[in-house]
Length: 200
Image 1 (tube, helix red, strand yellow):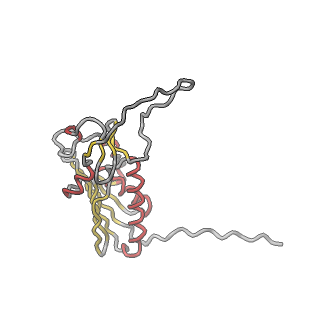
Image 2: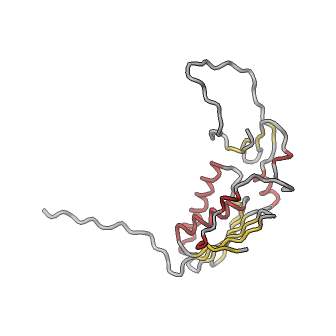
Image 3: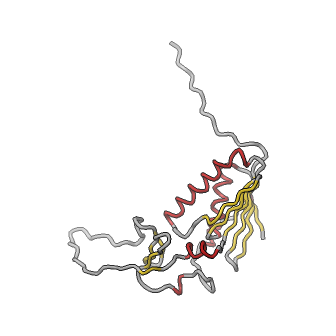
């Protein structure tokens, strides 16, 4: 099933945890505080976060109430996170294909946009990663760890350069394929308007 950007497709309904027979589900994970030995992300309160990132739902001290000393030290258990397991196995759930005859002119700019978006996404969800980027003379093929991350990359790419974007997905296999066709005309960076000098 394919749908174009003009039909107003929104992937928000697909924001759900891995369930069912998904081999990368956290259902079989040991209980307690976990840490991935590959990317050092930690699993706490049913979510993966990067070290130094504030976890949602953290307890706040009550005003006027002194904190009680605690001797409990949480020692993390080594457990490879789903994203790193997908990288090891080469198991991608999202595919983004870029087609643009003017690819050579905008290659560095597009790759920078994709990597910046990945950095921001990993801050909120370490499981959203770019697995591979394979360039072609007229574009590139990108693989991602999640289906909605490929959709978001395509959305940001289309917002920056326009063109035409289509989505194709499988709800059963949690797989998404996004194709972006660049505009026919070359996109030029916006130039600042010249300010007129006041007459003396």
